[in-house]
Length: 147
Image (tube, rainbow, N blue to C red; front, top):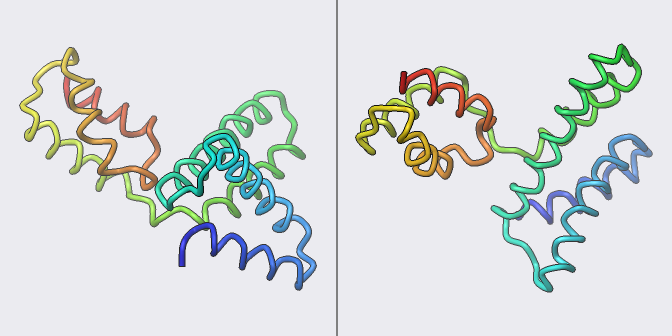
């Protein structure tokens, strides 16, 4: 079952169970997907849908940080709940240690030895961790290991 099909089925379940919050989050994801499908005049594959879901989670995490800085606990709780629902559609996330191992392997594969070659490492590494690790974490680990 594709991610789009799974979203449709989960939306139907949320309607039947009258879970309005979950329903609104799923509709928001489907809306983002539909907007891009309309722009590109074609259906998206699972990798493209995964990119959209990752982008939505990143937006919520950024908002969460801002809400916490501003002391808006009510909005922060809502953002956390949305992140929890959206995260169900991402593949199993890698732990920091698993990401560190992948970064070390990629550095060896590319032969990088300085921060100047960080782009080469990131270019080879990001397809391996796509949707399974936060880009900020990957970036930090690459910088640490290239020092």
